[in-house]
Amino acid sequence: MNGIGTIVNAGAVIVGGLAGTVLKNGIPERYKKIVMQAIGLSVVFIGISGTIKEMVTIVNGNKLDRQYIMLMIFSLVIGGLVGEFLKIEKRLENLGAWFQKRIPDKGVSFSDGFVTASLVFCVGAMAIVGALEDGLSGNPSTLFAKSVLDGVTSVVFASTLGIGVAFSAIPVFVYQGGITMLSGVIKPWLSDAVISQMSLIGGVLIFAIGINLLEIKKINVGNLLPAVFIPVLYYIIRIFM
Image (cartoon, rainbow, N blue to C red):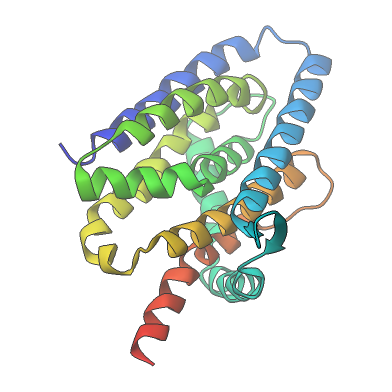
């Protein structure tokens, strides 16, 4: 059944988010702070490793070289402009605020947990590649693996950021489900190079999420989400030019 991977993934986020919310009340504030710092550092290095993995290549046997640099810059700039025009981050925050009015989570911003978790769970390469595999070949194994990771992560997130984390299952379901449904349409354009380029952009955005979690600088990662799909458009334009 195509799409089962996304259903399981969303379910794991809900269960993990609810479990973390229960644990939240028993954790002193100073422990929550160090946990968030630990998560932020982890997310930063996950982003760095994912970016380097796709950006660095071996040439002439043993020399390292960089690839996709200009496309990365182009994708982030164009994608950021599109996202800013669409006000993606603001819309996510407004959706979180709408939920918060109906499900108050005392002492924590519902929107913070909702937006942060939504971005973390949607931006990574596993979300894109897993959803494509589920749609193209009916193989949900990558999304099953992601479900385990997201379930554990949502417990940790919700223990500090609250119930908003559980509701991030909604964007996960829509985003990954949409990719799965459209996979047959975009299949002709998804070469290994294109997927690698999309994963590279995803790694950069994960790094940016880590910067936000560490409160170093507020980056509107939501508005940069369209950048992930710019490599596909670039490849299509090259074919027809």
